[in-house]
Length: 100
Image (cartoon, rainbow, N blue to C red; front, side, top):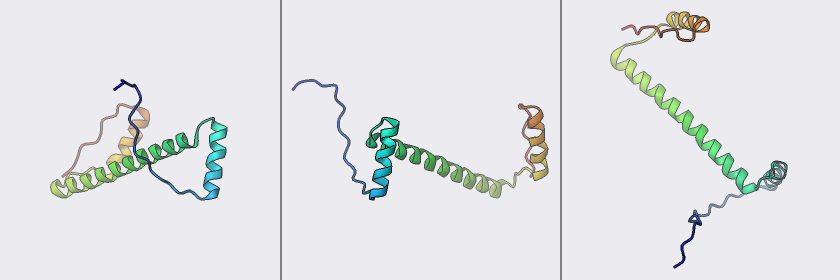
């Protein structure tokens, strides 16, 4: 069997697009000198990265709420406002301490 550097093929996924989307995709591909396939993969990658980041933020919020409920530790709004003003003046401003 001959050795090859060719990547193994990924399974094919079918995506049905209406004529309007196909036309827009074709026009954009021509303008960017890319294939429609490349643009679709790029769009999916961007979407996945955005949604994963959004989900990570939501999970972080859930974790923060759970931590607050368990410990009662928090930072007051006045402390955050004062810290934000300090950050404008000095980027290395220390975070305000947590209160119980």
